[in-house]
Length: 178
Image (cartoon, rainbow, N blue to C red; front, side):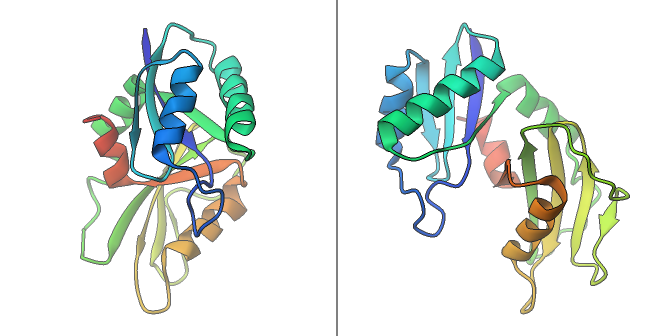
């Protein structure tokens, strides 16, 4: 059995595509997945399956969720081992943390075609992209009265497309405890 985490795109954000976690859990169990757990309301589902073809899994989950929940919901899959490797690498280890610092991981559905020079830093020096791989982007923002998380999300979507989903670093590390 392989342990996966499904990151669902765009549910329960600002009242859009509302999905109750209990409904989500039941939908994944109905697909035959084992040890299904949801983590937070942002659409993180831990599950196990003997299936290893992630493209087929993603397609199946997206189709079933649309049928069951009535919304088109994008799904990005990672194995628990992939998340463990990311956490072990600790891409933020050299970043000075302040109360305004927020770390994010943006999971990509396809290899990025970005031309940004990494590490990237905004002109204001408050948005930084510290790492880009074929499957994720690690970035952070220093919040201020003029800059917030939505500003970072705009930069990420502009550079890496809309078929991505972003999670706070704390959420990513919590997945391993799930």
